[in-house]
Figure 1 (spheres, rainbow, N blue to C red):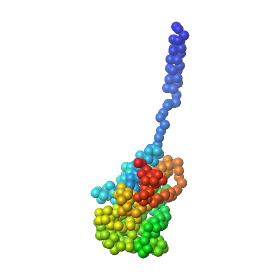
Figure 2: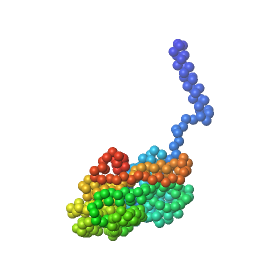
Figure 3: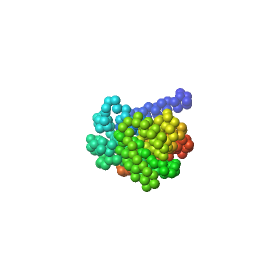
Figure 4: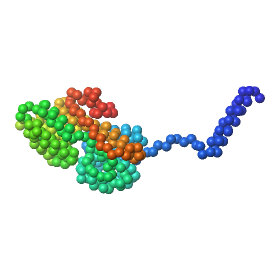
Length: 319
């Protein structure tokens, strides 16, 4: 037997010995186990860019923190006449272990929290409610947003112009709180203000046409759909009416470019969605049990600055 053959024989015997030792002990190579959290993100907001950015932020965090995420928007179930309570209960019935919740009504939120088992952690997104089930919250400084709107309107205002706050009669609690703040802050800045509630967004046409013909008016709306409707009227009828508001959507972007909307306050929905899911999964895995309220920034967007690098990360986070 040559030296080369002896070396191969020795290697073969060594491999057989190693395999025997492995098979006769409890030592087994295993793939690292990854715990997967089953969570649901449930919201009730218009199908606009805020909704899309929130969803993408939540999706990115779910991938990073190994969560099986269901994203549900109540607006997708309008044809089925499903309410938020039913939607939440359905997710609980199929094994949801944690919930990121945004609801337009504080009363409904409190009712939902009562039906959620204590062992299922909840992170609230832009929603106010107190419950032992709520482990964290994601919010925005509404007073700061209101002051920003008052500041921008004051800068653009001609002497004597008044402000009309416009919303739908069924607007969310969040929109109503914003308008309550604005109704208080505008007079402090020496600006007369009045509130108008639309029974239907189609009424925006008559309102905008009347205000434009009357003159001396500026319009502010934190209701995204109302703002879109009024901007569309301005475009269709050639009205020159200063429009300001809060929200972000494809139509708002187009109307900012066409200067039918002067400026809007936009929240960091992507960042809020990412943090909400990140926090929820860390609570569920025991990595972070600290109660926390995270307040995310708001930026001012106009037709001139929306493509600035400093704003693109919030407006177009996945572009």
